[in-house]
Image (cartoon, rainbow, N blue to C red; front, side):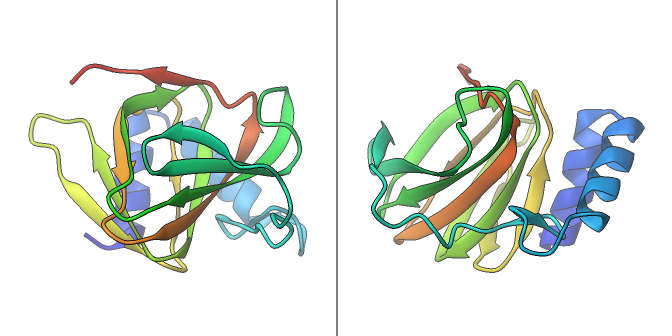
Length: 156
C-alpha cells in the first residue's frame, strides 16, 4: 500500500473530517525548519541525549520539547532488527516520519494489514487508532505531535 493511500486510510479510520482538515492545515502552514514540514518531522539534534527503552529492541530519544507534558514534542524511535512495539493507541494524533530503514506498521482491523513504510515517508496516526509497529532491519523513526504522548496498551 502506498504511503499516500495509508495517510488517507488513517484519516478515514479516525472518522473525523475535522481531523483531516486540521492535519492538512497544520502541514501546509508549517514554518520551514519547524519539527513538522509537510507531514514530516526532523530529528537532526538527537545526538547526545539519553535513550529510553520502550520495548524489546526499541528505544526512544527525546529531541525537542517534552513528550510527557503539554506542548509540541519530537522524539526519535530506534528499532533494532526484529524490534517491535505491541498493539497500542495514543490519546493524541502524531506525525510519523521514517528516517532510516523500513517501518512495519500494522493496523487493527478485521483483517489487519502490515504496511511497509520506507525511509523518507511520513504519515499521520489519528488519536485512538490501535496499531503495532516494528522493523525487520535497523530503523529510525521520528514522531512529533502535541503532548503529552500517552500510549495505551491494547490486547488483540
